[in-house]
Length: 61
Image: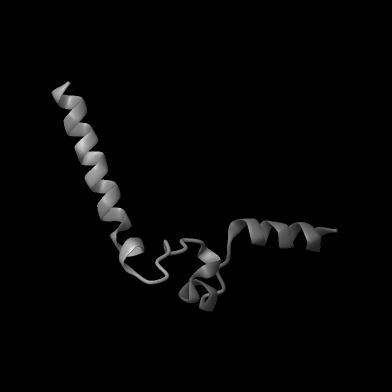
């Protein structure tokens, strides 16, 4: 039982710490981790694999 309570406390603390930014900012959102949403990746010409695959399928026809 002690292990369960300890695990529950650790999980709750982790969730709170992960959501601090979202809760405290006016329009708080999780950052997007999609490749296509990164300006640095777009500048290098690197895109989402699914988008590249879709474009390759269109070009193949």
